[in-house]
Image: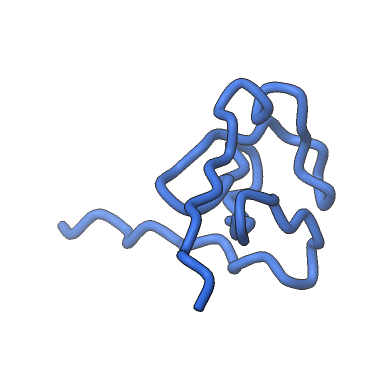
Length: 67
């Protein structure tokens, strides 16, 4: 059996990438890259960001303030 190796994503690489949907800046979360402009979240699989707009998690909408 092969031992599991952890592959990490280099955080400095995030500054060189852009959201494929809107070209916004991406910031690193624990397991994904999140677009600051449109809010899409792109998964990081085995240390490789999956920057395919169709595979991104939809932006989460903030709840409107309660009156």
